[in-house]
Image (cartoon, rainbow, N blue to C red; front, side, top):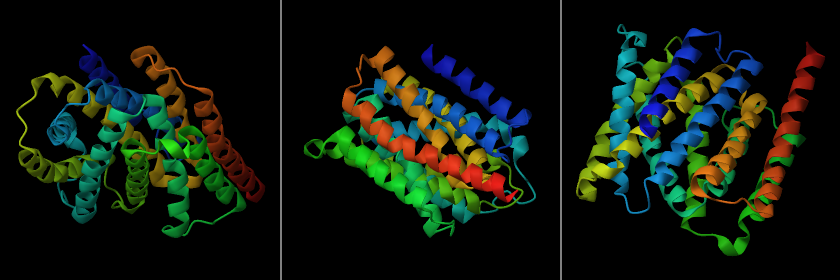
Length: 307
């Protein structure tokens, strides 16, 4: 029932962002897309965590890849059949980064509480802003420096240095890979539809994920299939939201909206997994979120002043 509900939620989300004027071409629409996407992403994380710690990881990733591709197939009308493989190298890179990020995501969610893992995941917007100044040559400001310092301090407060483990390192690595994949969206071919890009990315993820599944050599686990499908359909909604939000608007203007997912993670972790957030989590989250919010406001004021 859970995977069916999540499937309906993701499909409705896809139809909404594709048929309504939720283009991501304005700051407001991009922010709304990121908020909606993070709500769906929280369900994705919840499905992965609910699958348990003893699942064959690469088999789980392969199932996610297969069903993500199958769910996207009905939207084949968005494919440009005159140039179906346009940007293939970029989509191949993004597809394999998707496999890596899936591995890191699963490891971190198996070890860490949902809210703690998501608190680390939401350092990704900071990494996006920093990388955008280095790669996309976006302007580096004092507010960006403050956001980076605040984010680092927030991580230390939440985790405490004595508590670093593989789950924490995996969560940080996941955030970095997610940031890179988000910035690569800006390099997608002009005129290529979002679902065309998603189809190619998932298509190119299938061969390597299959090889890893065979290499793992685990017996087929039917109990986890429903969780894999649920996380797959939820991840589609998040992917569409991110692609729309970051494709037309500077990353520094909307990245703060990603932090709404932390609230969703706290609520789901509390209601579903009986995880009680502590004071350190709240204090650290404030150190991460407040500088990014202030940075977004400063950017908007500068835009209004120059208009």
